[in-house]
Length: 203
Image (cartoon, rainbow, N blue to C red; front, side, top):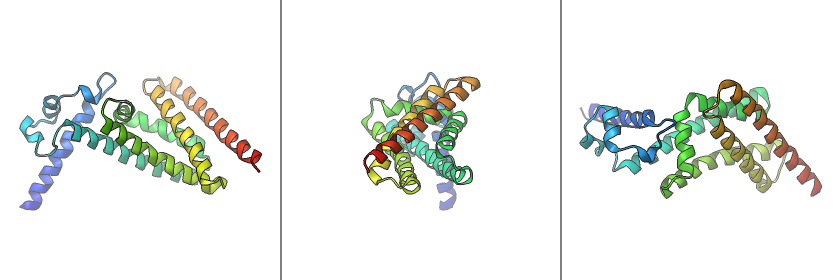
């Protein structure tokens, strides 16, 4: 019996999370959502919300964490594709662009809360982005033979470029997104080439 109740509780919690994500769109940010709206969308009574989350901030942080899980899954997918195809820059940009097409609500949340009014949200998004930096820096260090610090600097520049490109691509038409993807790939190759020349100049 206890197992069934736990399953039902987890199911309701999932329903609340999914409802909040559905309400996020081009016009709506998380801070503009009310508890009543979310519970109405989830089909539960407002009082039931507090059995699953302390308040709307806790729900919001859970959404950011969910976005982080999606990004980590994306990184694993990108690494596999890099192993198969070999181009870290092209594969990374294309994988990011596919992500914002399939999960625009997740990316909008991360984008808005990255510079939002909540310190807790900003820290949570920053932490999730650092996963990308660490993974990419590790890849650069081991494939290019760069020192750890230089690999991290390059990785940070590349992640910022891709994140900003994806923010611009959110509301683009397919043809515009394709051009933006190609431009981002060129920019990242300039960064990589510059890093190469910089390190050569130090030897």
